[in-house]
Image 1 (cartoon, one colour):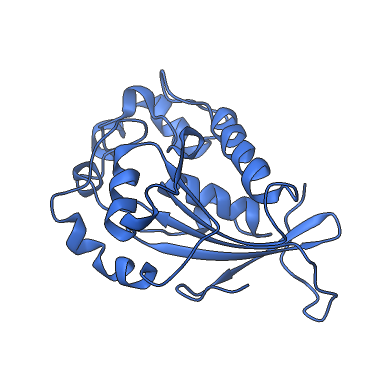
Image 2 (cartoon, helix red, strand yellow; image 1 turned 180 degrees about the vertical axis):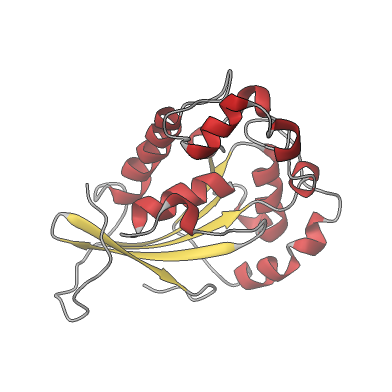
Length: 219
């Protein structure tokens, strides 16, 4: 499947549309310390509710057809802070976890910069895997599995659909690179507690994606 930017604004509208809001979890202690945080199940900082208050206000009046959340604690807590009314509706999915950094979990650049394998990984993460960590292909395949099943499938939802996803920075970067043509993995900068909206429309065999300003929600 090829994901392309909408090239012809006047083209015939598709009955299949998706409006997706991707939210990165709030700040953890390891985020503050710039440590690699993948599958380690760490909660948010004690003042997370204050950090997320604006996002909570933005989400207060919004409704969603489906809500998905990483099963890790920091994402569960983020969802509980910004939209506690959605907890019962949410589907917690391990495919939305951050990449697993293996032996590098809890370490930062200063601690790893003299490690030759680490430097190779920085240069080419597609080919180099952290010791006891998750290979890029494995990470990509599980996120793609989620996208095919929950976003791209015409049979998974009604024609027009609004989805909220609370997940991690690496997952958001990867999803952006898959949903919008020409966007690379490192092209998206997303900070803790930030929301990014993408509108998708089916055109022929392709889903065409555009980044929109949040809290605008279409459909």
